[in-house]
Image 1 (cartoon, one colour):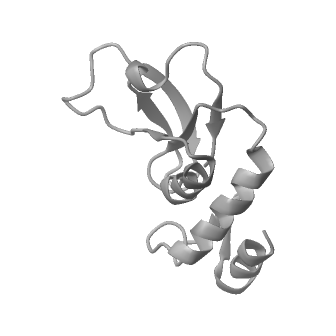
Image 2: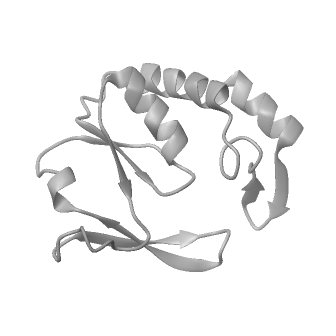
Length: 124
């Protein structure tokens, strides 16, 4: 995580209220080499978690979750903020604070991608 810490120190900007702007390498623009290194390290740390899938929230979590899943050999499921017409009527839904928008955001996942009884690794 040394590489990530250094990028946060040099390119991140603290905006107050617990918000760290990292748009130049995670959110708005993604540094694939940095995300690959983060994914490798997360995978190493969580290799014994016996996870069947990696779960994240759209949009900021997708890059680190995808790279973590790559090294663990697992699929990635991301919680959507809006329910597409292709999603079944019955869904898993929760709300979580969006610190950047100052609201509670719905996170929606189709149950077909989170089978009961599986261990899920959350990377966000």
